[in-house]
Image (cartoon, rainbow, N blue to C red; front, side, top):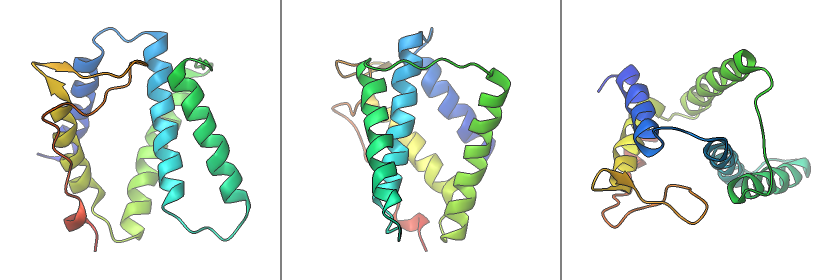
Length: 146
């Protein structure tokens, strides 16, 4: 699968999971996005005490958004889209600089995410977050790290 097809397949996964996304869906997904940022921060040893504080606040915001205890709305949609695209570009750059094959890993993670569906429907928790289904296959990513 080409890199652009992986991105399209990821979009299709989200469309299958939420054919008509609501404001609540947006907030849960935004919470999941911040949760991934917090998980990334946990993998790093950053030599400043500010890192622990950032991890705390990003994690707290992620939990609140996913539980419906906080609500976000987009004020500047074009700037939001630009920021999302820049995050994709910079994320790939971080992985590249660390000797990682992000494109290959993204394809593997995407394949894994499709196993969170049962009979064509996503498995969800009580907050609407898509979770691992009974046939979930975790992605093996070791071969994408040098």
